Image (cartoon, rainbow, N blue to C red; front, side, top):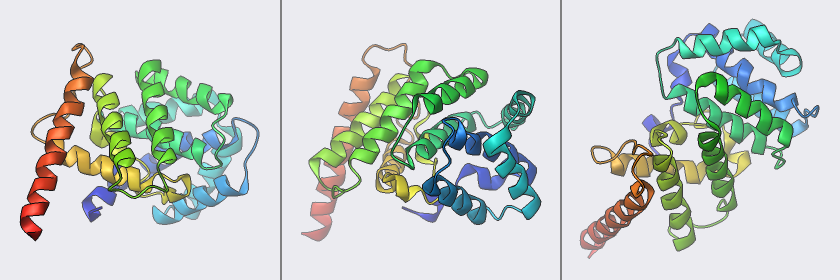
Amino acid sequence: MSEEQKKHPLEEYSENEQIAYLSILSAVCYVDKEFGDKEKHQLDVLLAQLKISDIGKAKIYSSVFNLQREDKLANLDAIQNLGNTELKYTLISDLCLFSLVDSKFTDEEYQYILGIGEILGINQEQVDAIRSIQENLDSIKDLPSNSERFRQVIKESVATLAGVGIPIGAIAASGSVFGLSAAGISSGLAFLGAGFGMLAGAVVVVPAIAIGAAYGVKKLFDILWKDNKSSDNVKYS
């Protein structure tokens, strides 16, 4: 995974803008009334990697236990005003990743994420697609990246995103600065990012209006991977 791929889009913004994003993200940790050691550790890692100030950390930790509705709406409004249309999908993906840290994706967490998605204009089908992808990536955490099952999951993931009109790069970027290997999906995200790179210039987002969109992306991935493999064979022959 290149340094460019590792960079989370949140790094490009000011601390106040980061705090708005992270307050929404951290609040998912306690919606089920449990804030375990794994979630606390992950939040600490996140804040340290983004070099959040002590004052900022205090605001974010306060949001874990007491994010008022008006503050949530103000933070989401700030996120939407950043002008990065993909960032809202990255936020939903990061929320799903955080919910998987303790291996328990609760209904309370799911409902919270659905609510955030609704405010941001992301429908339930899209939220479910992102959740499904992160859970599937978690399921292949112990598989070698060159295995057929690993590649099949990545191919299906890209097709799923395309089928519901979600930018592939927005999901590939999620978690990349947060050290979310604890959720078991870092290698999958890396390959999802690689898939986004292979599709660049060909398919970035496939609108869901086309019935065969997802199938078409899977076939395109088959061709690209086959070409990639052939190139490698020629290179090392």
